[in-house]
Length: 316
Image (cartoon, rainbow, N blue to C red):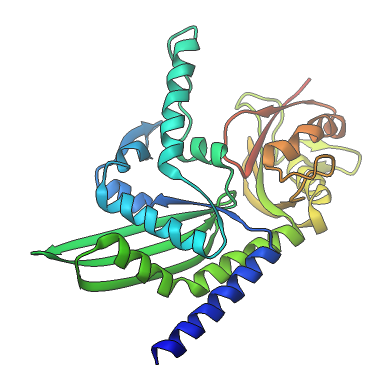
C-alpha cells in the first residue's frame, strides 16, 4: 500500500514538474496573508483621507517563529514542484536598507512611502503571490495546525487557486506543515501552472487608469474628442482595446475625472528584449501615442503596482 501511494505521488509530482517546465516556471513569492498580519498586530493602521488602511510590516513577521516556519514550508513545497521562488524575508531586509538610503538622500528628510506590498513586488517581480494563513493551537507538548493558501495574480490580485488543511496532535511544526501542504497542493499547483500558461499565450492582464484634475476643462463622460463625436470615456476605451491583445479589455469605474479599464491583455514579453514586461514598461513607448491620439497633454504617473499604469490628461 505504501509503495503504491509513493508511486502515485511520484507520478503526480513528475507530471506537475513536466507541466511547469513546459510553462517555463512562474515566479512565486509567499506572503503572510493580510488577515494574519492584522490579527497578529503586525499591520500599521493609517488614515488615508478618511479611509482606514492597514500597511503590513513584513519585517516584523520574520520574527514570528510560526509564520516564518510556515513560509519556509510553503516555499519548500513550491521549490520541490519546480516553481521559481523569491524569499520574502530576505527581500524585506533589502527593502528596509533601501528606504533608509532614500531618506538619507532626500533633501527634505522625507521620502514618499510606497505601499509595502507594491514595494516588495517591484523588487521581486513575481508572477504569482501566495497568501499564507497559519493557525497553531498549543495543547501541552502537542500542537494542532491548520493552514490556508491562496494564489493570486501579482499584477491584478485575481485569485487563481486555493487550498487548505489541518492536522492535530503533532510536535514538529515545520515538518508536519510541509507534509500537509505537499499533500493538499497538487491541484493548487496545477491551477497556477495552467493560469501562467494562459498568460504567456494570451497576454498578461493589467489595469489602465486615466485621471484629470477636478478643475480641468476635460470631463471624461461629457467632453467630446476626435471626429466621431465620441466622449473621452468611449474614445479611450476603444483606443486601449485596440492596443490590447485580441482587443481584450473591460470597462471599470467611470467618473468625470477618472476612468479605469481593467483586464487589459498586454504582451507577456517585450519584442525588443525578449524579457517579461510589466504595466509601466508596456506604457513607456505608447505615452506619446496617446498624446498624439488625444491632442492634449498626457503624462504617465508614478506609483501603482506591477499591473497598473496611470495617465494624467490635461488640456493644452
